[in-house]
Image 1: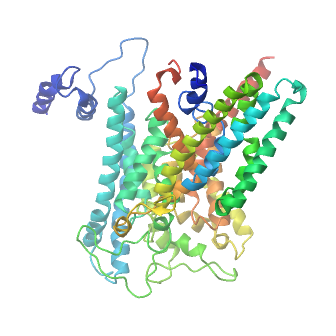
Image 2: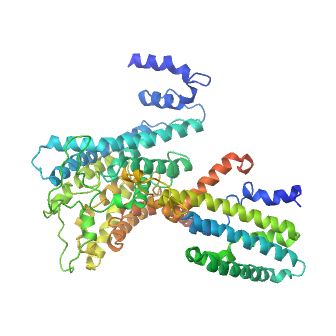
Image 3: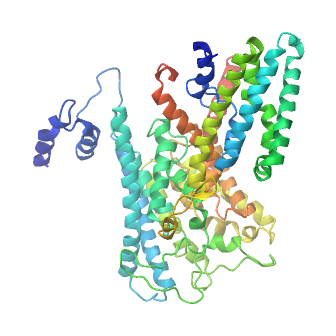
Length: 402
Length: 208
């Protein structure tokens, strides 16, 4: 450690203004604060310092995402070997396949996003912010595994530039950057983002695995199957896994179903939620009210089942297990930058996300899943909600003063 | 003919005083007709024609128009010219006139037109008014063409209907960006052009 410190001190002058590598100063600062506690102290006014700085907050969220990430890797491999008819290969083969399939996406997402952040920081002569640490790991988790890497790169660049940097960088964005990435992919390349070919990787990952899909293979997610349901609506639709075996409630809960890597497993997401809530990083008000809103709306649509809108045949709890709803509730809606900040505002914000997500999912046949659009829509309304709550509060207190 | 002032009247709308980029006028048609390059060019030419001649006509009769009903007079003049342009398009370029259908008619409500008539033609002689109309129309058309160029190239892989992006790109996994065809990307493209323009013109930037 000491040697590293000495090395950093030795190369420092080159990065100072006038040094040979002055153009890379923000990169040096970024690496230095990444390795060591920053040496700067506040010089004016009164400051309260908390050990929980931005970096630690971000790392906690990344740790909370790890269960979903590891399970996602395993599930990518599981679905792959199931699809090519070798479900008997062991746990480690499946995990290795998933790791090799997801690694390029993670590398691309971080390389593009951090690259743009470094350049922007250097142009504005600011320090590099840690905001992209979380976004960079969220993107591989919510993008379908078969999305070509160049599409992910283009979408990440678009999101970081137009959803974040133009608003002033980390902490200033109106929309959740990871969801903007996904929304861009969804609208720009719709054929790669839904349907049979998006969610289950059949070909090899970096040379490992690979094969041809068995007869009767279908790569549609449970919600995708519901969107193409053609029954009479008298009973709940029967959902199958990728080789046509019916799925149980248990499969939906553990997450061994087709879908974007991070979103399938309720268990992994709930572990992440527990980490976020115990450490106090995420707001329990938002998280709980998203689930409350989702349950309320799911119960309402379930009370009016119809064959035209097949998703209304699912009972409310199953409804929340499928698709990206839980992932959005735990990791997307609770983003402190883009969400509401007042307490009452957080209840309204979360509840409306839940309601709109189920509303879009059930009644808009163009979109099998509505969680992404619901969060983005409410991101736009969060400042308005806060404004209303605050002005209402001011009025109430003024009345009391009279 | 082209005194210093007239030159400014003609050329300022192209960059420093661009109706779309600086005054943020005529945005709706900028979003609507820029999916393909050809309709954008036709729309631009139509607006130039209507704007130049309505400016001249209003300028000629500017002293006889009672101020209380001047908007109605302007609308009548513009509407008459728009109908002439519309009939001309139907006669000579039927396919494009179908694509542009309502938007040619909606030139009547184009904010740039009303803005120029009110702000310039009512107070100036016919020749400068004509130049002002042509200049603002060109400024509008310039933006339309730039936006349509990027939207058609990235959204459909073509330019003026000809395939530009070679087939082997598609064979190697390239796909057209469907979002470019949707109106939001027109807005973002316009925003990018504004970004570039303001970065180059220091006097357009607000004081921090």
